[in-house]
Image (tube, rainbow, N blue to C red; front, side, top):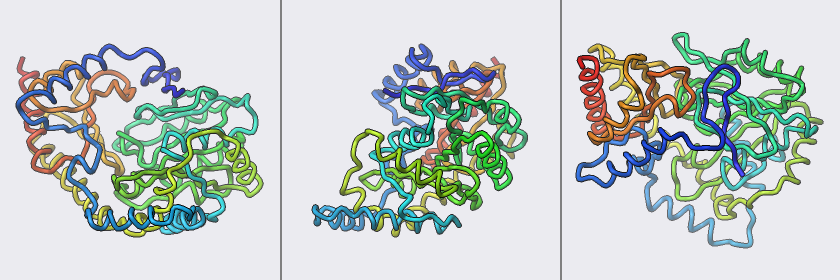
Length: 392
């Protein structure tokens, strides 16, 4: 059974166990909005296909038909080599033998944090907050560490260092993180590598959105000083190509990586889809057309937010280093939950900051994937609603 991060380091966070009644109220309002007469301007949709960013149907059919045509061919080595080649394009030399596949990103994360821990007593996994809630296996205990904003989103290095204890088995990292868009630079990774090396903990990086960073960044797959796991997926690298599979790639000292991969082999879990695995080389090899369209969409919607800032829109854009989300600070004077409900009544959906563990009231998260014309229309309604609230 999965669990969610529980805040205990001075920050909020998505709570484990009972659902937040505010979330249930939002869900009911969303169901009403989707059932209403007007089309919903969904500024919280992060599915590229639903937002009109799709592969060419003929090309996708060709790839998947080829993957189905040889059911006796496992395609494991070819898929491992394709992932290693993908990481080589990011400057990380990884042996194909260090790549393992999982049925989903959640299964890949569970595989990594379980394989990271030679000692079951090291049950703590440090996770970033604010962030989307992570699904983690029951046998680990998640603890948050804070991201901070000082003109850009960054890891709070001091808080992270204080949070590592003798019971820490792994530190989880997003690159880019969601929804903040925080991207660790080389200095961040060097610090994390040193902290994890000294604590004998593993660094687990969710790099599924690495192609969406505003500038190329290093991968943990290139680290050599500590045990590290890169986590990727077809959906992350290729959008929504009609099939999905996730993977981890182990990095670090050979003895640590080999021992971790041996532990990974004993981790139970659903088997990866063999068709998806056979399709990995072709889909990764042909992803650039989709990636270009995706980056253009993200750039246009970031530009719309920048244009709104020039006319002094009633929010502050908290700059991230990439990804498909943006964070807006609206100030504590307006109740973010009430605002999101009011917007749904007007046919616009955004997400309140409390869903991600933002400290205090007054934050919104918006997806940058919606069609640009519809995205601008949603921003106009948001701006009008915020100004009405300030006047009221």
